Image 1 (cartoon, rainbow, N blue to C red):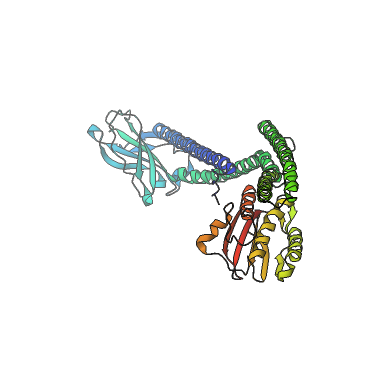
Image 2 (image 1 turned 120 degrees about the vertical axis):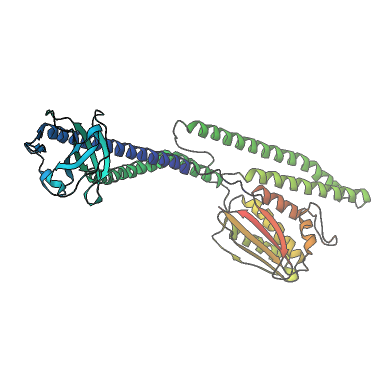
Length: 459
């Protein structure tokens, strides 16, 4: 058998894979963009809050009588009074050149006994932003500013306002969690919508496939129904091809029948004339007329099979046809007392083709088995996978050697010239089976003789 070409892939899977890939990419990009925007927003919000506290601290700093900086009035945020709250301020005294001379000369109560160590920033460079380690090793965001007091003898000061970075990570974590849930639900909804769209969109193609399968199985001679505008032209063209093919086949069958009738009539006249004479010429005429009739029957069978294999209504019960042939062969070979058995043919097996063609194939196989059988012929049938029938015809005759089995299917080959026959029967079986997409093989039979196995399409 020829290997079937493997399909290029599922159109449904291609569409779903492309759509799902785009959905996942879009959702991932949207999640990354929203998370980045939110992080940027809360970072700017923290920066604005630190700037506000630093402005308040700048406005509240005074130099006391002892030369130490005093913050009055206190800053308004209550977290600055709560130890280790995560919000701190500190004032450093700077030496000449702007380097720190004394760190933490004044600080918020929230720092408790801790001191912030911020990198050096030269005077006049504006507000500086740093990341430093704070109390308990927690990461702090620090905003620093150098301040020159109004008092002439007062040293320059550095003002620091710091906040725990956790005020960013905690809301960011909550936001990312809610964002993941929302985008996950969105992705699931879009995926479901894509699946529904693909299934509904490809439903006309599935209906077209069922119509084609019904047409191929003999259920219909054309594709019925309305299809979307993208598919309807293909359906219309296919129906035109089916109608044209049916017309061509019918015309060919009619012409073949007319030709056979036209040729057989003069052949019948020649045969009748030769039957009245016993001479050598009459014998030659009878022999050639018989050969011509066999050739006509052979080619008519092939033409009929070529046409009927595509017929829309070809459905033939196998058991009924087999039993009819077995009854005829039992009467034909009654004198040899052959045991011809067909009990192993299941009653539910149906051949997808014409009854006349099944009778031609099965009849030739059974007749050949009866000619060679010593006492028993058996026919059995079963399903061989979806859409296929397997028929075995066994005999208990002498059998055939392995290297000779393929020759019995050649046209005109006879294994024993002493036995009656034309050598065309098994060749006709092979041609008819091939026309229906089946095949025939020979092997050793469990009965000891020859087994001929025939594969045919099932309805």
